[in-house]
Image 1 (tube, rainbow, N blue to C red):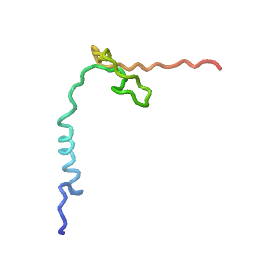
Image 2: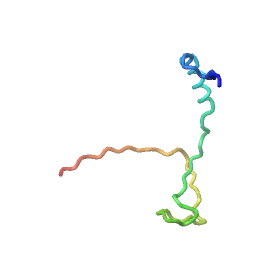
Image 3: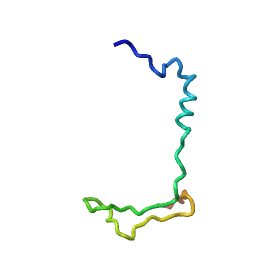
Image 4: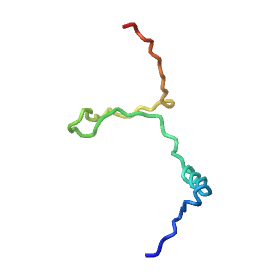
Length: 77
């Protein structure tokens, strides 16, 4: 079998890399809805999650989740 020319030869790496990265990042993930669902399973098996009930519906939030980082004050031992 004759050798096959690679589509991305190493010597062209610096020249081709920006266009490859542009192709990868062209279609980013779409915006997601702000919602959350309770941790449940449809059928009971050997796990610790509760079984889904008819009232287990998602919760829509007005905005994305916020993360609050609190510093703890050290206590005397």
